[in-house]
Image (cartoon, rainbow, N blue to C red; front, side):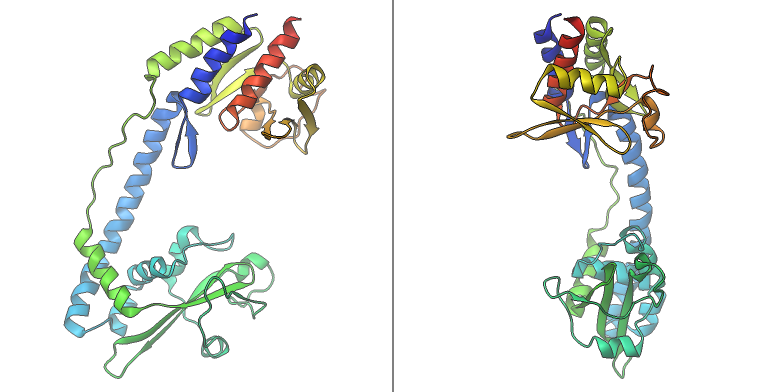
Length: 329
Protein backbone atom coordinates (compact mmCIF):
# COMPACT_ATOMS: atom_id res chain seq x y z
CA UNK A 1 0.00 0.00 0.00
CA UNK A 2 1.41 3.38 -1.07
CA UNK A 3 1.30 5.47 2.12
CA UNK A 4 3.07 8.38 0.40
CA UNK A 5 0.18 8.53 -2.06
CA UNK A 6 -2.31 8.48 0.82
CA UNK A 7 -0.53 11.40 2.49
CA UNK A 8 -0.35 13.33 -0.79
CA UNK A 9 -4.08 13.02 -1.50
CA UNK A 10 -5.12 13.59 2.13
CA UNK A 11 -2.96 16.73 2.31
CA UNK A 12 -4.66 18.08 -0.80
CA UNK A 13 -8.12 17.29 0.62
CA UNK A 14 -7.72 18.26 4.28
CA UNK A 15 -5.03 20.95 4.32
CA UNK A 16 -4.54 22.67 0.96
CA UNK A 17 -8.25 22.97 0.23
CA UNK A 18 -9.54 23.92 3.68
CA UNK A 19 -10.47 27.46 4.67
CA UNK A 20 -11.74 28.88 7.98
CA UNK A 21 -14.75 31.06 7.25
CA UNK A 22 -17.01 32.56 9.93
CA UNK A 23 -15.34 30.32 12.49
CA UNK A 24 -15.98 27.12 10.52
CA UNK A 25 -13.50 24.90 8.70
CA UNK A 26 -14.82 24.25 5.20
CA UNK A 27 -13.88 22.27 2.10
CA UNK A 28 -15.31 22.63 -1.43
CA UNK A 29 -17.86 19.95 -0.51
CA UNK A 30 -19.23 22.25 2.21
CA UNK A 31 -19.38 25.38 0.04
CA UNK A 32 -22.93 25.16 -1.32
CA UNK A 33 -24.36 24.58 2.15
CA UNK A 34 -22.30 27.48 3.53
CA UNK A 35 -23.60 29.82 0.83
CA UNK A 36 -27.21 28.88 1.60
CA UNK A 37 -26.64 29.47 5.32
CA UNK A 38 -24.85 32.77 4.65
CA UNK A 39 -27.74 33.93 2.47
CA UNK A 40 -30.28 33.08 5.20
CA UNK A 41 -28.15 34.90 7.78
CA UNK A 42 -27.90 37.92 5.51
CA UNK A 43 -31.66 38.00 5.06
CA UNK A 44 -32.18 37.87 8.83
CA UNK A 45 -29.53 40.54 9.43
CA UNK A 46 -30.99 42.66 6.64
CA UNK A 47 -34.45 42.58 8.22
CA UNK A 48 -32.99 43.47 11.63
CA UNK A 49 -30.93 46.36 10.23
CA UNK A 50 -33.95 47.68 8.32
CA UNK A 51 -35.96 47.70 11.54
CA UNK A 52 -33.17 49.61 13.30
CA UNK A 53 -32.89 52.04 10.40
CA UNK A 54 -36.61 52.81 10.31
CA UNK A 55 -36.54 53.63 14.03
CA UNK A 56 -33.26 55.52 14.07
CA UNK A 57 -34.34 57.76 11.19
CA UNK A 58 -37.12 59.01 13.46
CA UNK A 59 -34.76 59.21 16.47
CA UNK A 60 -32.20 61.23 14.50
CA UNK A 61 -34.88 63.72 13.40
CA UNK A 62 -36.14 63.99 16.97
CA UNK A 63 -32.63 64.64 18.31
CA UNK A 64 -32.21 67.48 15.82
CA UNK A 65 -35.63 68.90 16.68
CA UNK A 66 -35.62 68.45 20.48
CA UNK A 67 -31.91 68.75 21.26
CA UNK A 68 -31.74 65.18 22.56
CA UNK A 69 -33.73 62.01 23.14
CA UNK A 70 -37.02 62.67 24.89
CA UNK A 71 -38.84 60.15 27.06
CA UNK A 72 -41.57 59.80 24.45
CA UNK A 73 -39.03 59.04 21.72
CA UNK A 74 -37.11 56.60 23.92
CA UNK A 75 -40.21 54.62 24.88
CA UNK A 76 -41.40 54.46 21.27
CA UNK A 77 -38.00 53.38 19.89
CA UNK A 78 -36.29 51.77 22.88
CA UNK A 79 -35.25 48.64 20.97
CA UNK A 80 -33.23 50.61 18.41
CA UNK A 81 -31.83 52.98 21.04
CA UNK A 82 -30.93 50.20 23.50
CA UNK A 83 -29.35 48.14 20.72
CA UNK A 84 -27.24 51.07 19.50
CA UNK A 85 -26.18 51.97 23.04
CA UNK A 86 -25.35 48.36 23.89
CA UNK A 87 -22.73 48.27 21.17
CA UNK A 88 -21.28 51.57 22.42
CA UNK A 89 -20.74 50.20 25.93
CA UNK A 90 -19.74 46.77 24.62
CA UNK A 91 -22.25 44.72 26.62
CA UNK A 92 -23.58 42.33 24.02
CA UNK A 93 -22.17 39.27 25.78
CA UNK A 94 -24.68 36.96 27.41
CA UNK A 95 -24.97 33.71 29.33
CA UNK A 96 -27.40 30.81 29.11
CA UNK A 97 -30.26 32.84 30.59
CA UNK A 98 -30.17 35.68 28.04
CA UNK A 99 -31.45 35.74 24.50
CA UNK A 100 -29.06 35.66 21.55
CA UNK A 101 -27.29 39.03 21.31
CA UNK A 102 -29.65 40.35 24.03
CA UNK A 103 -32.31 41.27 21.47
CA UNK A 104 -35.15 40.27 23.80
CA UNK A 105 -33.69 42.37 26.62
CA UNK A 106 -33.32 45.41 24.36
CA UNK A 107 -36.92 45.09 23.20
CA UNK A 108 -38.27 44.75 26.73
CA UNK A 109 -36.22 47.63 28.09
CA UNK A 110 -36.98 46.56 31.65
CA UNK A 111 -36.11 49.33 34.10
CA UNK A 112 -33.94 49.02 37.18
CA UNK A 113 -35.85 49.67 40.39
CA UNK A 114 -35.09 52.72 42.60
CA UNK A 115 -33.65 50.30 45.18
CA UNK A 116 -31.29 48.72 42.64
CA UNK A 117 -30.18 52.12 41.38
CA UNK A 118 -29.54 53.29 44.95
CA UNK A 119 -27.58 50.15 45.72
CA UNK A 120 -25.34 50.57 42.67
CA UNK A 121 -24.85 54.32 42.26
CA UNK A 122 -21.48 53.99 40.51
CA UNK A 123 -20.41 52.41 37.25
CA UNK A 124 -18.27 49.27 37.22
CA UNK A 125 -16.03 48.62 34.26
CA UNK A 126 -15.04 45.13 33.09
CA UNK A 127 -11.95 45.34 35.32
CA UNK A 128 -14.03 46.33 38.36
CA UNK A 129 -16.81 43.75 38.24
CA UNK A 130 -18.98 43.63 41.32
CA UNK A 131 -20.12 40.18 42.44
CA UNK A 132 -22.36 38.69 45.10
CA UNK A 133 -25.20 41.20 44.77
CA UNK A 134 -28.94 40.60 45.02
CA UNK A 135 -30.35 38.72 42.05
CA UNK A 136 -31.08 41.21 39.30
CA UNK A 137 -34.17 39.31 38.11
CA UNK A 138 -35.46 38.36 41.58
CA UNK A 139 -35.71 34.71 40.50
CA UNK A 140 -33.11 32.85 42.58
CA UNK A 141 -34.30 29.32 41.76
CA UNK A 142 -31.78 28.88 38.92
CA UNK A 143 -28.44 30.62 38.52
CA UNK A 144 -29.09 31.16 34.81
CA UNK A 145 -32.22 33.13 35.74
CA UNK A 146 -29.98 35.72 37.37
CA UNK A 147 -28.78 36.85 33.96
CA UNK A 148 -30.32 39.84 32.22
CA UNK A 149 -30.19 43.56 31.49
CA UNK A 150 -31.97 46.38 33.29
CA UNK A 151 -31.93 50.01 32.20
CA UNK A 152 -31.83 53.30 34.06
CA UNK A 153 -33.18 56.40 32.29
CA UNK A 154 -33.58 59.87 33.78
CA UNK A 155 -34.77 63.07 32.09
CA UNK A 156 -34.41 66.80 32.75
CA UNK A 157 -37.25 69.28 33.18
CA UNK A 158 -37.67 69.62 29.42
CA UNK A 159 -38.05 65.84 29.08
CA UNK A 160 -34.65 65.17 27.47
CA UNK A 161 -32.61 62.13 28.48
CA UNK A 162 -29.76 63.02 30.85
CA UNK A 163 -28.85 59.68 32.50
CA UNK A 164 -28.78 56.35 30.69
CA UNK A 165 -27.19 53.29 32.29
CA UNK A 166 -27.02 49.53 31.68
CA UNK A 167 -27.22 47.07 34.57
CA UNK A 168 -25.95 44.02 32.71
CA UNK A 169 -25.63 40.65 34.38
CA UNK A 170 -24.00 38.60 31.65
CA UNK A 171 -23.17 35.43 33.54
CA UNK A 172 -24.52 34.10 36.81
CA UNK A 173 -23.94 36.62 39.63
CA UNK A 174 -21.57 39.01 37.87
CA UNK A 175 -22.91 42.54 37.34
CA UNK A 176 -21.46 45.26 35.15
CA UNK A 177 -22.93 48.76 35.36
CA UNK A 178 -22.08 51.26 32.62
CA UNK A 179 -23.27 54.74 31.74
CA UNK A 180 -23.84 55.62 28.12
CA UNK A 181 -22.21 58.81 26.85
CA UNK A 182 -25.22 60.60 25.36
CA UNK A 183 -23.16 62.63 22.88
CA UNK A 184 -21.62 59.41 21.59
CA UNK A 185 -25.06 57.81 21.41
CA UNK A 186 -26.53 60.65 19.38
CA UNK A 187 -23.52 60.58 17.04
CA UNK A 188 -23.92 56.79 16.64
CA UNK A 189 -27.60 57.19 15.75
CA UNK A 190 -26.85 59.79 13.08
CA UNK A 191 -23.91 57.74 11.74
CA UNK A 192 -26.03 54.57 11.42
CA UNK A 193 -28.68 56.44 9.45
CA UNK A 194 -26.15 58.09 7.14
CA UNK A 195 -24.17 54.90 6.45
CA UNK A 196 -27.07 52.46 6.18
CA UNK A 197 -27.06 50.25 3.11
CA UNK A 198 -28.21 46.74 2.32
CA UNK A 199 -25.88 45.30 -0.32
CA UNK A 200 -26.07 41.65 -1.27
CA UNK A 201 -22.73 40.24 -0.09
CA UNK A 202 -20.42 38.79 -2.68
CA UNK A 203 -18.88 35.57 -1.49
CA UNK A 204 -15.94 34.65 -3.73
CA UNK A 205 -15.02 30.99 -4.00
CA UNK A 206 -12.05 30.69 -1.61
CA UNK A 207 -10.50 27.33 -2.49
CA UNK A 208 -7.64 26.75 -4.93
CA UNK A 209 -9.29 23.56 -6.22
CA UNK A 210 -12.63 23.78 -8.11
CA UNK A 211 -15.38 21.70 -6.54
CA UNK A 212 -15.51 19.28 -9.49
CA UNK A 213 -11.76 18.65 -9.29
CA UNK A 214 -11.99 18.25 -5.49
CA UNK A 215 -14.73 15.65 -5.99
CA UNK A 216 -12.48 13.87 -8.50
CA UNK A 217 -9.72 13.75 -5.89
CA UNK A 218 -12.19 12.38 -3.30
CA UNK A 219 -13.25 9.66 -5.74
CA UNK A 220 -9.60 8.91 -6.52
CA UNK A 221 -8.82 8.61 -2.80
CA UNK A 222 -11.81 6.35 -2.17
CA UNK A 223 -10.93 4.13 -5.13
CA UNK A 224 -7.36 3.60 -3.90
CA UNK A 225 -8.00 3.27 -0.17
CA UNK A 226 -11.70 2.37 0.01
CA UNK A 227 -11.22 -1.11 1.51
CA UNK A 228 -9.77 0.55 4.64
CA UNK A 229 -11.04 4.13 4.79
CA UNK A 230 -12.77 6.71 2.63
CA UNK A 231 -13.85 10.34 2.51
CA UNK A 232 -17.59 10.79 3.06
CA UNK A 233 -20.08 13.64 3.35
CA UNK A 234 -22.32 13.33 6.43
CA UNK A 235 -24.86 16.07 7.15
CA UNK A 236 -22.90 18.46 4.92
CA UNK A 237 -19.67 17.76 6.79
CA UNK A 238 -16.54 16.36 5.17
CA UNK A 239 -15.47 13.33 7.23
CA UNK A 240 -13.21 10.28 7.05
CA UNK A 241 -14.76 6.85 7.56
CA UNK A 242 -12.69 3.89 8.78
CA UNK A 243 -13.80 0.31 8.23
CA UNK A 244 -13.51 -0.72 11.92
CA UNK A 245 -15.54 0.49 14.88
CA UNK A 246 -14.01 2.99 17.37
CA UNK A 247 -12.80 0.35 19.84
CA UNK A 248 -11.06 -1.74 17.17
CA UNK A 249 -9.61 1.34 15.50
CA UNK A 250 -8.32 2.80 18.76
CA UNK A 251 -6.60 -0.38 19.91
CA UNK A 252 -5.21 -1.16 16.45
CA UNK A 253 -3.63 2.28 16.07
CA UNK A 254 -2.56 2.50 19.72
CA UNK A 255 -0.83 -0.87 19.61
CA UNK A 256 0.91 -0.06 16.34
CA UNK A 257 2.64 3.14 17.48
CA UNK A 258 3.71 4.55 20.85
CA UNK A 259 3.27 8.15 19.65
CA UNK A 260 -0.54 7.90 19.73
CA UNK A 261 -2.37 7.29 23.00
CA UNK A 262 -5.87 5.84 23.41
CA UNK A 263 -8.48 7.37 25.69
CA UNK A 264 -11.94 6.13 26.59
CA UNK A 265 -14.40 8.98 27.13
CA UNK A 266 -18.03 9.13 28.28
CA UNK A 267 -19.38 8.58 24.74
CA UNK A 268 -16.63 6.97 22.71
CA UNK A 269 -12.89 6.49 22.27
CA UNK A 270 -10.42 9.16 21.26
CA UNK A 271 -6.82 9.27 20.11
CA UNK A 272 -4.25 11.84 21.17
CA UNK A 273 -0.71 12.80 20.26
CA UNK A 274 1.80 13.97 22.83
CA UNK A 275 4.14 16.95 23.06
CA UNK A 276 5.31 19.07 21.41
CA UNK A 277 2.31 19.14 19.03
CA UNK A 278 -0.72 18.07 21.04
CA UNK A 279 -3.76 16.99 19.01
CA UNK A 280 -6.75 14.76 19.58
CA UNK A 281 -9.32 12.92 17.51
CA UNK A 282 -12.73 11.72 18.71
CA UNK A 283 -13.82 8.42 17.16
CA UNK A 284 -17.53 8.41 16.35
CA UNK A 285 -19.95 6.03 14.73
CA UNK A 286 -22.30 7.53 12.09
CA UNK A 287 -25.16 7.59 14.60
CA UNK A 288 -23.19 10.08 16.70
CA UNK A 289 -23.80 12.63 13.95
CA UNK A 290 -27.50 12.49 14.83
CA UNK A 291 -27.51 12.04 18.61
CA UNK A 292 -24.92 11.79 21.45
CA UNK A 293 -25.31 8.05 22.14
CA UNK A 294 -22.81 5.98 24.14
CA UNK A 295 -20.67 3.65 22.04
CA UNK A 296 -21.24 0.00 22.90
CA UNK A 297 -18.66 -2.45 21.53
CA UNK A 298 -21.14 -5.32 21.36
CA UNK A 299 -24.09 -3.39 20.00
CA UNK A 300 -22.02 -1.39 17.52
CA UNK A 301 -19.64 -4.19 16.59
CA UNK A 302 -20.15 -3.82 12.82
CA UNK A 303 -20.35 -0.02 12.77
CA UNK A 304 -17.60 1.96 11.01
CA UNK A 305 -15.77 4.86 12.62
CA UNK A 306 -16.16 8.41 11.33
CA UNK A 307 -13.94 11.36 12.30
CA UNK A 308 -13.72 15.09 11.62
CA UNK A 309 -10.40 15.53 9.80
CA UNK A 310 -10.10 19.32 9.57
CA UNK A 311 -9.20 20.51 13.09
CA UNK A 312 -5.92 18.56 13.37
CA UNK A 313 -5.36 17.38 9.79
CA UNK A 314 -1.69 16.41 10.17
CA UNK A 315 -2.57 14.19 13.13
CA UNK A 316 -5.54 12.68 11.27
CA UNK A 317 -3.27 11.86 8.33
CA UNK A 318 -0.82 10.15 10.71
CA UNK A 319 -3.72 8.10 12.14
CA UNK A 320 -4.88 7.18 8.63
CA UNK A 321 -1.42 6.05 7.59
CA UNK A 322 -0.91 4.08 10.81
CA UNK A 323 -4.29 2.40 10.44
CA UNK A 324 -3.76 1.37 6.81
CA UNK A 325 -0.24 0.17 7.59
CA UNK A 326 -1.53 -1.92 10.49
CA UNK A 327 -4.33 -3.38 8.41
CA UNK A 328 -2.03 -4.39 5.53
CA UNK A 329 0.78 -5.97 7.53
